[in-house]
Length: 115
Length: 112
Image (cartoon, rainbow over all chains, first blue to last red; front, side, top):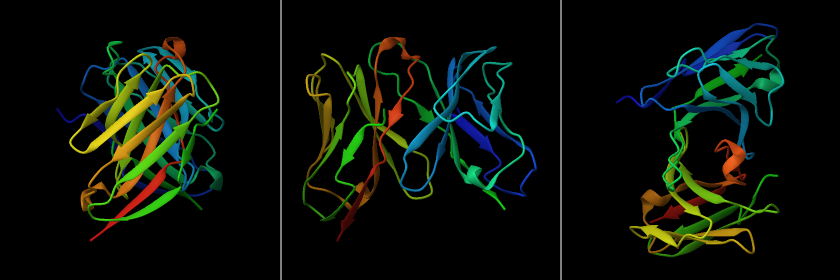
């Protein structure tokens, strides 16, 4: 199992450009999440999905969009990139059983710089 | 509401102990602890559920006081490999779609 994979690892964007951050998991998890991590601020939830075709906003959704057409993939779209979106982006997934084992598995992250 | 972690940073010598605290203003269902090494993804350490017992593996353990909405992570006889940033993630209820709200983190540095 590869777990959660993210591409690209690094990207530099110019202000106003758009891009899609890819996230794929091979664990058949229904729940998937996108976080951004800024220095000293912890992880902030952008969007999440509880299954294919179902997505919802997290704490900081402005400037982002998501889709979930398959169980495996959960891409994050940035439209009109702004310097405030410079951050490290992590995708995570979980398969909660309610028995205390619903850990979130994180991908390796995408480091995005907007200039 | 973001949980509050304390201390923000701690420096230890190998073999010393440390306690990291996580407090929330909301009633909690579970607390998750993660460790993140520089430039890497967070890695799960343990989860504590409401009504559950103190957990631990190796020399790292944690407790969860539901009445105070607090959790503490205990690292005993620290090793160099314990260095990293520790995050608590809190879940307010089973209807939350397993969403976690993370604290700002505690930077732990273990020196030889």
